[in-house]
Image (cartoon, rainbow, N blue to C red; front, top):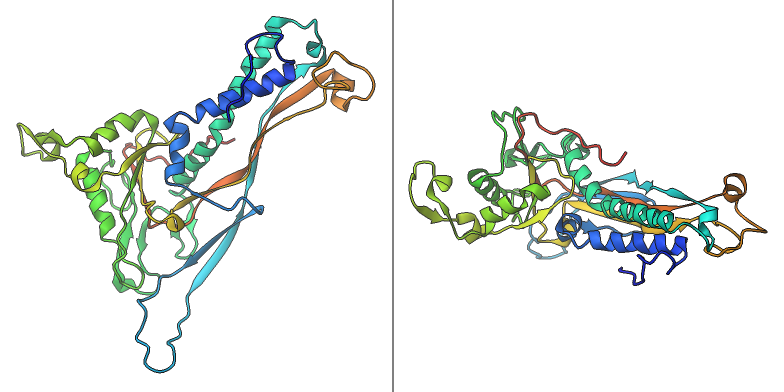
Amino acid sequence: MAFAGPINAPRALDPVTAVRVKFMDAYSDMFKQPAYADYLKFVYIDDPEGDLIYTIYAEPMMPLRAWYQDRPMSSTDFRYWTQSIRRFGDGMEMDVDDLKDDSNPAKRKMYVMSAEKLGEAAAGLWPSLVAEAIVRGVTSIWLPDGQKIFDNHPMSIKKASVGNFRNYYANNVQGGSSAFALNYANLLFALKAGLAFKAPTGLDYPVHYTHLGVPPGQAKSAARLVQFDRLPGVEINAANIGGDAVNEIAKLYSPEVCEIANLPAGTWCLIDATTPSERPIALKKRQDVTWQFTQGGEVVGTSQDEGLVSEMVFTKNKTKYGPKARGEAFFRNWWRVAFFDGNASPVTSLSIIS
């Protein structure tokens, strides 16, 4: 969404247009950074229509049955619940007199630079909502079984014999005796654990983790674990004190490393995005980032300052501008994602979006 234009020339564009162009330029530039775009690789983009989010859960069924006379008939046990989207925005204001031809070039430059910061803040919205939803899973309830989203879940609500599946590892949580840092042994263990998952029917329903989500500061060390053909032997096996060894993670699994802006330091997650319809985390962009401004004069961006004006211009001689968006990130299931906390004191909340 890059906009062309000589935005650095103080008089090339009227102030309102220059501010808008600089905002869109900064907004699109931020999306070139992995931390602000990688979430699109593993997040399900929900239908933008409607102000309510519907989450529907239905237990899997057994394979098709033998048909001898009448067609076999079954029923599926499903539940659904709703949640509302949120509205987001920010803004600044400009003195109407700065719209005129004799305005201060330095002040115009300040308005333009402030718009750049608004663009960066707007670009950070969607990945921050994803990070917030992930951490919120530590305390939020998965309604079908009444347990937290990240927990030691029964694979079947009705058949305890199927067993449990643990998708959360942290210090002093679910019997954990230490923090679960991102290292070779822990990552390999988690990748193997996903393959053992079974559907509520008891059938094999393996989870193939395709993406490793990390804070931007851990991206390079994570890439080393999943990309290098060989690693120091002592890292792979503590008993191996010399030489190097084959990296089983890179050879057999190779999840793609994804940076997630504002994911807390020391935390990481594994996500199975193999089947788009079962991606565990979704993002509903009810209204993507838009740019708004109030009327600054009879015609915005000209030297005219008479006749019909907005109440804000009439009472305070100001015009306001800024971005707006509506949407929410949310969980669609818990079995295609696992969350790990390498901090001595586990992270239980994240306050990015105030």
